[in-house]
Amino acid sequence: MGEEPQKTEEKRKMPKAQEKNNSSPNANNTGPTQANTRSAAAASQKNPSTDSDSREIIRVINALKTDMQGHNDCLKQELTQLRQEINGKLNSLTTAVQSLSDHVDEAESPLCTYLKQQRSLQQKLTDLESWSRRNNMRIFGVAEGEEGDSVLKFVEKFIKSELPASQNMELKIQRAHQTLAPRSRPDAPPRPIVVNFLEFTTKELILREAWKKKKIQVGERFVYFDHDYASEIVKKRKEYNTVKKALKEKGICFQTPHTSMQIHWATGVRTYNTAQEAQRELRKRGFPVEEPEPTEGESPAETRLLELMGWQQAAGCREKGSAAARRVREKLCEFQRGHTKDS
Image (tube, rainbow, N blue to C red):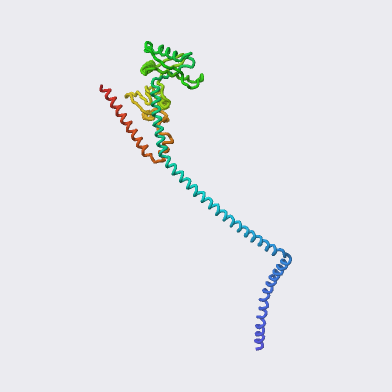
């Protein structure tokens, strides 16, 4: 019985000891926290300028924000004014371009008409010039100085000595002179001599006799005779140069009357009215020939105007018409060849 009161007293004392033990860590933790607080307070007391510097930085940042906001407002206002000016200028440019477009539309049709009229007048002028030259003949290859004091006397003597058919006839040469181009250099081809006859028949007779003889020589140079063509006709005849070169390499005979070409194929003589037509025929037959450059027809400006005005269909119709005309000519040539064989 005496032991039980003693145990009860020990149990009462044990919780108090545990409470003391449990409270000891809290006391230990509180110590460092208070120490940190005291150190921070001491640091703040030691550096009083830190807070003032922070406040100054914040004030400067706010001032910069205010200035930037003001500049942004000014830029927005200037951009708005610039956009309004650009829009106004664009509107005025649009109006001006529309006005120019209207003027161009009004001028295209008359200009195209004038170009066609100019081409027609040029063709008529070329025809008149050709008629005025029909009694003329050109002699190519006579060296400069061979004519002596009188070109007319030299030509008359030269023709009668080289062409026997003209010895007993009166040539009736009215004028004879070299072309009006500058005197040629020694290494350049000499200027041709232009001879004007009183009668067309005399000129034709001289040309036929000269072409029959083929090779006529004066000194060391070969001389040949031809018509005195107008400048536009000369340009047109030059288109056949590439075709002539290809035919000469193959040894095929040909003739170029006026602005056409006659080629003596093995199947017969065939006439081509343009250099492009002859070139296409040679390519079909396997001849290497370059594309000739046309010198007649619609000018680039006229072609451009026709394209702008939407006249491509008319151009296509013209091409179809020319193709049909070529087919008709080919059939006529075939008929003529067949008729010749039958006869």
